[in-house]
Image (cartoon, rainbow over all chains, first blue to last red; front, side):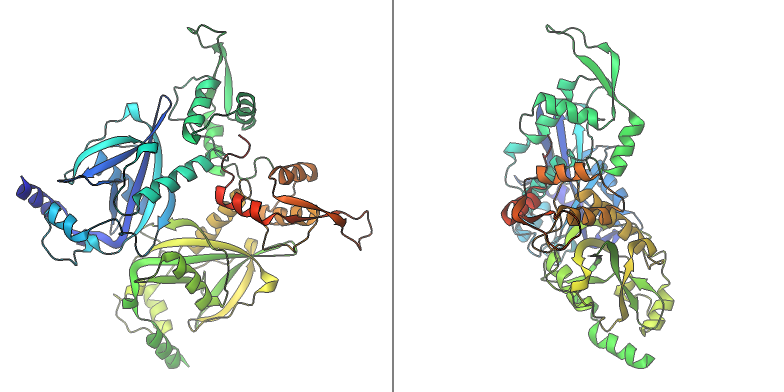
Length: 258
Length: 258
């Protein structure tokens, strides 16, 4: 079993194919029904969890490399990835035993293997509806699993720091950019939108202020129909005005409110 | 003249000292009296303008490398640098003739010189009061000059794109983070603060909305004294509450307004 793993890796991994010393790490948040999760991989033959990561081919744009890596390592496609920070501390590999990991993955004892030299790592994040995607482990991975953001285990390298920062940036993004286009049904109610925001922020919001701010962005269209089926008075349905939504994404609503 | 330049560079430049394939580019905005400028360097023996840039020493944190590079290339110190984006397009070197530049800088004809291989570049920006700093060219540079942001010439590599994006991020930053602590005198009037914001945004702002938003951040302290010397009614003086200001910087005011 172990020798076959070792062989697979050596067949597929070729350090020469990639731009050295630069890696990509992917923080994929999953939203579903009031829960916020993050996608982690468990490395072959062990209990080490980490973010999905990858490298850049020599002639490849970095953004394409991020999408290719996500697809190869988890099977996820067509995800809106956003760069959020590049991690360049000299001791990024502190939570990591090189020898031990190399042995387990079946690399030969050459400690100068390029994979394990210092890398500067570019972080991307995404937010997906996790009920709609089925992550699939690659040959380096025993398992892909969604973890609650509050229950992430100690990860390899600086990956816990990465998740913390990505969450901070995602939360900040809510204050200047609309989100939710790919996370809600086409028609949704204001309470559904508020629940999405509350889940990401991890705190309750004032209903009236929330509604005022959302309508103030000018990206929501209120429909004539109301939601049916509830016990209470049927709430209005809204949908995103796609053109204005995309314009707002592009602008980052930089001067909104000034 | 040319051979002495060549010698200087070969004495100082040692590709082995640095993490390969990763560079740092610095977009230094200068604010002064209603003007917004950006600091550019002119490479030795030519008319090519570019941003100040640098590389990371093997045992050095990337952020320290950014500060060291700024200091070595321009003489500027103690500047608050903020990472804004990492540039990883495969054709970043499109506006750049490798052979021509190497010849001019006095490198030998070895086209595999590591300096000219593909680099992924991490962009940092800063905003300084440009009347207070005197940039000093290093040995690779004939001249450091402040250019009006609206009049930047065609630059080497993707440096025009970098300035455009840094300006966009700086403008966006105004909507969720206070700025100005190092750009205004300790005590300032609301019109002075508004002028700073208008200069950065490149557009006039409504006086009353501006005042309301600034006070809403809870980081300004109104003083008992008023500004004297003007022809009109003396305006109030304000100062930043340093503790709250730093807290706001740290939070990014992520949930402000929600």
